[in-house]
Image (cartoon, rainbow, N blue to C red; front, side, top):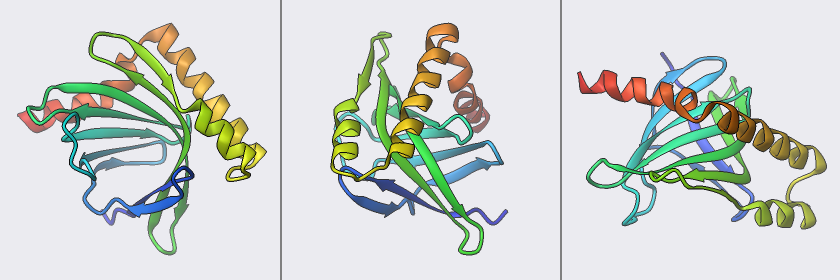
Length: 163
């Protein structure tokens, strides 16, 4: 399969980076699963996997330490732009994040950045609403059903690689 070239666009900081080392393991209309190494050397994250839920507007990442133990689950609120002519897929970070640590503690992060991006007109009202609605959808899913159904595609890929 001729997978698209992946990009990550952020508003704060303003950047668009090619994810040239990300390996696409699965891609269809609604979901993409990737395997990746951290872009910058960090002590708490070495590599991981991500599952992009395009229709729902979020990405779930399993952040792994150097010894392949779980650092945390990281949920980014996203939208995307798929250009079939240039065969590119740009994932746009809509700033709000949810982090779940191995002990079960949960943190909602970067709502201040979402507000700042709107105030500075880095994002418009439509993207602000999209971000908040996707965050609400994600939180409702977590509160009602936990994260196991959301993380299952990643865990299935990992268990398939271990065989």
